[in-house]
Every structure is written in structure tokens, then in C-alpha cells.
Amino acid sequence: MPEYDHSAAWKPRMTDAEITAEARRIIADAYRPVPQVPTAYRDTSPLPAYGTAPPVPQPDRRIVPAWAAGTAVAGIGVGATCVGIGCGIWLACQGFAAVTLTSVLFVTLPIAGLAGVFTAIGCALRALKNVHTETHHHYAGPVRQETNTITAPAYGLIARNRNELNR
Image (cartoon, rainbow, N blue to C red; front, side, top):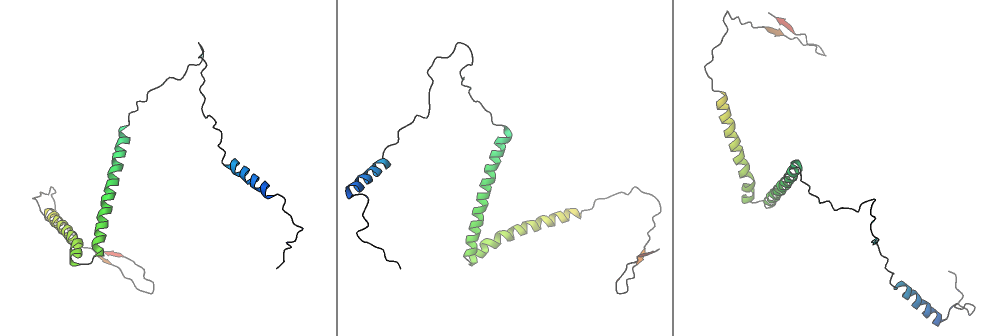
């Protein structure tokens, strides 16, 4: 590690008084207020008798279109719905976190109730579907029923289907 020579050959270039004066000048310059410059100008000269006219205030009377108002209301409704669903999920997760008989019933009873309602609706629809009314067929003539047999031999390593219709 080199040693530095602190001999008398090195002398400071400024005296203590000069250093103090320079420090005070730098600090004073740093804290000197910035002159204020105006950012707007008003022309006070009179307007010409002819030529370009001065600006005239134009009142704004906009009417919001119905589709925009409907979109805004729908957005508020969707947002409120999402908040409600999120709160419901949060409450359900709170119920899942506390695994007790009450929390299990809290989760399963509404699901079982909905399943019961859907089952009842399905049974009612099936009962309505099986109701037969008297129908009258409007065709006349002999009816012949043919039973056809289809043989489909498949043999060999790679099976090939050859369907043959036998009458």
C-alpha cells in the first residue's frame, strides 16, 4: 500500500477565510428566490371595427344518448353483481375454512335444495312428455313391415367391415 507524502511541500490553495466566504456564497446562491415570470398575457388593445370577431361564448347543452346511459347503468349493475358474488364466495370460503358440522350444512344444504328443485322440475316435465293424446292417422292402405338383417363379418389381423344387407 503506497504511503502518501504529507510533507510541507503541499499547501492549501485557499485560506480558511476564503473557504468560509466561498461556502457562504454557494449557500446564498442555492437559496436565492427564482424571479417570477408571468405565464399569461392579456392584450388590452381595442378591437378593430372590422375583421376577425372576438370569441363568443357558446353554451354546451349536450344530451347523453340512450345507448350510453344504458351502457353506464348496465356497467354499474354488472359491477354490483360481481361485488355481491365475490362477497358470497368469500362467505362460502369462510364457511369452508371452519370445518364443522355447521359449515358442512351451510355448504351442502343449499346445493341439496337446488338439486331437489331441479329433480322435481325434471319429473314434472317427463310426466308431461309421456301424456298421449288421441291421434288419428290419415293414411290408408296396406302396411308391410320388413325386418332386414345386416351381417358384418370382421376377421383377420386388420378388420375390414363389409356390411351386407340381406332381405
